[in-house]
Image 1: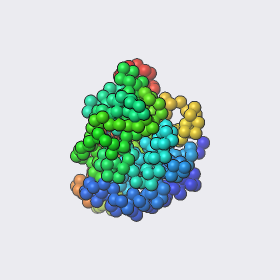
Image 2: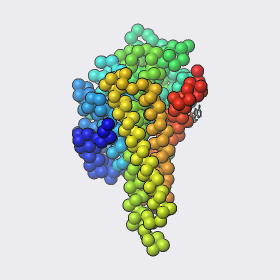
Image 3: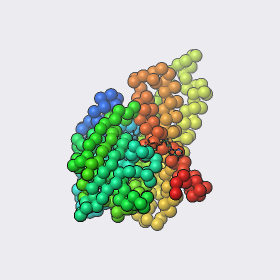
Image 4: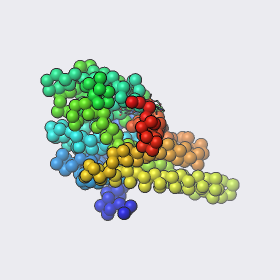
Length: 404
Ligand SMILES: Cc1cc2nc3c(=O)[nH]c(=O)nc-3n(C[C@H](O)[C@H](O)[C@H](O)COP(=O)(O)OP(=O)(O)OC[C@H]3O[C@@H](n4cnc5c(N)ncnc54)[C@H](O)[C@@H]3O)c2cc1C
C-alpha cells in the first residue's frame, strides 16, 4: 500500500498550483463581482496546460493517464478551488471533467469524436441536466420524456437549477440529460443522452443564485427537441443507472472543490490569527482559536485521505470493471459527499469568525467561499440526506430506501 502521489502526479499538482496562484487567484473576486463568466484567458491558459482533458484519452484530444484519471482530476479541481474561492471556475471545470469521463465510457464513437475534443480544448461546456421542478432528489419521478422516431428521440419537458445554461449557449456544448423513454418501467425506462443547448425547441431562463456568480444556473425547457440516437449513452432505458455511475465520479470532484476551498480558508485563518494581536498577544495563542483550527485541520486531513481512496477505487474499476463492488464505491462516494460540503462550510464559517468583521467584508475571499459551498449543502449533485440514504442502505440494508 502506498498513500503518496507518484512523482508525475505531484509534478502535475504543483504545475496546476503555480498556474492557479498566478492566473486565477488574482481574478477570483472579479469573476464573482462581474458575474459575466470565466475570463477567456484563464480558459485558454488551462487548455494550454491540457487541464480540460485529464479525463479524456489522447485519441479524443485529451491528456488522460489511463487508470489514474480520477486521481489527476481530483488534484486539479482541488488546486483550482484553492485559487477561486467563489467556486465558479472549480464547478465549471469539474462538470466538464466528471461528465466527459462518463462519455468516454458510454458514448458512441460519433459522439466522442464530435464532443470530447471540443471539451478537451476548453471550447465547449459540458454539464448535466437531471433536476426538475417536481424535485431533484427524487429522480425516479422525473417527467421529461421522449418518443423515438426513426433515428432520433423527440424530447419534451423541463429541467431546473441547471449549471452552465448561458455558457453552453454562448460557447457551444450542452448537457447530459435524463428523460423517460418507457415511463411504465420506472427507473428501468429512462435514457441518458447528450443534448446540445443549441438544439431546436430549447429555451432557457437564467436564475439569480446567491453564489458561484461566475457560472450561470437556469431552467431549460424542451419542446419537441430532436435528439439523434447517436447522442444516447449506453443503451436506451439504461439511463438512470448510467447517471448514477456518472454521479460517483462527479461527486468525488465536487468534494475535491470543497477540500481545496476549505484548505485555503484554513491557511487564511492560520496566517491572520498569527499576526492579529489582541490582549497583548497573537490571536493564535488563544486555545479557543488554535484548537478550533486544529480540529478543522484534522477533519480536513481525514477527508482528503477518504477522497483519495475513493478516487483510487473508481480508477481501479475503470481498468478492471470487477475490481471493486459498485455498492462499496457508492457508499464511499456518499461518505465523501455527505462530509465535504458540510465540513467546508463549517471551516469557512470558522475562518470568517477568526477574521472578525473583516471576514464579513469583501476584503477577504471567505464570504465567497461560504456562498459557493452552500450550493453543495443545499443539494447540487445530491443533498446531504440523499447521501445518508445511500450510506444507510449499504450499512442497514434495503429497508432504509424510501422508494421501491
Ligand atoms: C447552484 C446549484 C447548481 C445546480 N446545478 C445543477 C445541474 O447542473 N444539473 C442538475 O441536474 N441539477 C443541478 N442542481 C440541482 C440539484 O441537483 C438539486 O438541488 C438537488 O438534487 C436537490 O433537489 P431539489 O433542490 O429539488 O430539492 P428536493 O429534492 O425538493 O429536496 C429538498 C430537501 O429535502 C431533502 N430530502 C429529499 N428527499 C429526502 C428524504 N427522502 N429524506 C430526507 N430528506 C430528503 C433534500 O436533501 C433537500 O435538502 C443545482 C443546484 C444548485 C443549488
